[in-house]
Image (cartoon, rainbow, N blue to C red; front, side, top):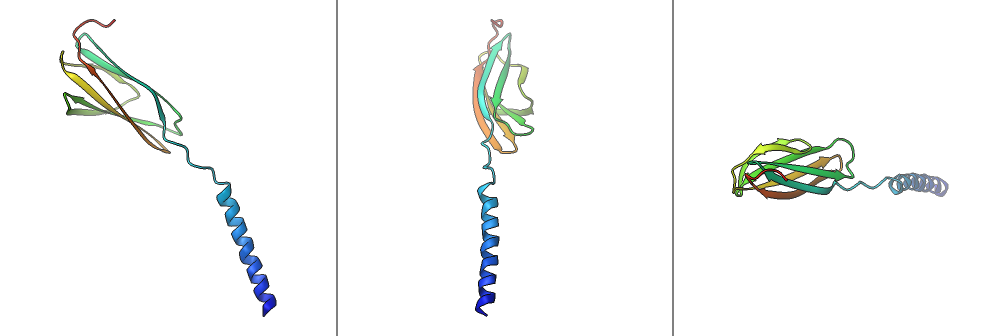
Length: 119
């Protein structure tokens, strides 16, 4: 009886050791993508925003929520926010959400709409 208990406990310890070795070598999850820069510009009664990011794992979804004077206008999905018509003197804010297989990063920026020509 004691002999079979010793064999059983060795088997259990072997199973635990194997399980722990898998846990010890499981790679840790990466962080969500990092925003390198977000730049919004305006001119000629239009505005646009350019985004750069790094550290993404797999495919990335970029969501833009656009506001005018703190009122929600629309959501669009694209790597950059292309030229959009705007009302001179109105402040446009953007909320950007980058999502990859590791999670979501959020950042924001804004620009005042200018009727002057682009520099």
